[in-house]
Image 1 (cartoon, rainbow, N blue to C red):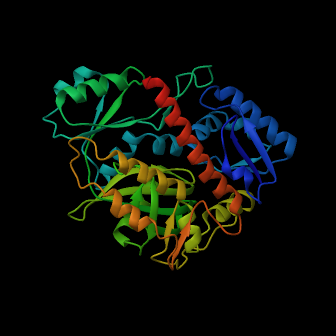
Image 2 (tube, helix red, strand yellow; image 1 turned 90 degrees about the vertical axis):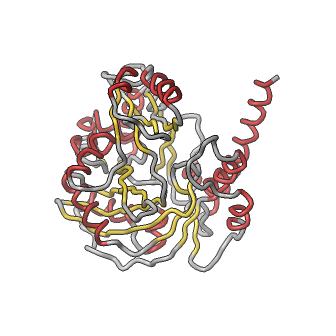
Length: 383
C-alpha cells in the first residue's frame, strides 16, 4: 500500500505498518496541474493498481483529468455528473426537496443586494459556501483553490457583512436556517443502481460543538424510512461507490438533510469496527468487479472515538459558546469527565489501534506540537 500526502505536511498514515511506500505530492490546492502530473508519474513508476482519493481537494483535480489515468490504473470515484451533484450543496438539497426529504430553508445569494429581496429571515442563520472547495474556471492555472467556510449570523448587519466577505472570494454563498439536533449518518455501497451494506450511526460529540465532523459516534439500528429516502437520493444522482448521507435529527424527530459525502469519510473506522469493511469492498469492486453482500448484520451500540478530535473538542469547549448561541452548549467539565474514561466495553478508536500504534501516537504528538506552535505565534502577534 502506498500513502500520499501534501508535500511538507504531516501525514500519520505514512507511519502505518501497512504502508509500503510514502508519496509527497505538490499541494493540490496550490497547483492542481503539478499535483496531477506528479500523481501520474508516481503511478507509472510504481505500477499502482488503484487510487482512492479521500479529500475534496484531491478528488476534484483527479476527476477533471481522469482520462490521463486510463490504461494506467483504476480510480475509486463516481462519474463526473454524480461528483458534480454531491459536491454542490445547493443542487443536492434542491434534489432532496423534490423527493420530500427535509432540508433547512436555504437561499442562494449572488450579491449583497439579493438579501433585500428575500422574505423575512429568522436569525440566527448559517452562512456557508456552496462547495467545500472551489476551483477557478480554469482549474489548472496557478491560482489557489478557495476553501469553503461556515459562519453564523445573528442580525441583518452581521449577515450582510459575512455575505459580502464570502462574495469577495466566491461567486455565490448559501444562507441556511439554523438547525439544532443530533447528527445522524447513513452510509452504503452503491453499484449498478443497487445499494449494499446499509449502515447507520449517530454523533455523540463533534470536533467543533457548533457543528463539524464527529469526534465520537455510535452505531445504531437502521431506520427504514431514512434508508429509503437516502437510497432514493443517492441512486437518483447516479452515484457509484461508497457514500455517506448526513442529517440532523431535530427535537421534533424530523430528519433534515445536511450534505452527501461522495468519498470515503473520516469516521469510516466505525463501520469497520462493527463488521462492515467499506474500504475492502471498494477495492474488491474496483479491481475485480466483486460486489459485496447485500446486507451485513452489523454490531450496534459500538462507540468509536478519535483522540485528536476529542482533544480539539475540549479545546473548543474551553473557549466557551459564541455570543447569542441559540441552543444548549456542552459543559467543559462534564465532557472532560465523560471523555476521561479511556475504554469501556464496545469502545474503539479511529486513530489508535493496538495492532498499529505508530500513526495514532504520532498524530497525538503532532496535535500537541501544533497547539504549542499556534500559542507561540499568537503570543508574538499580540506583542
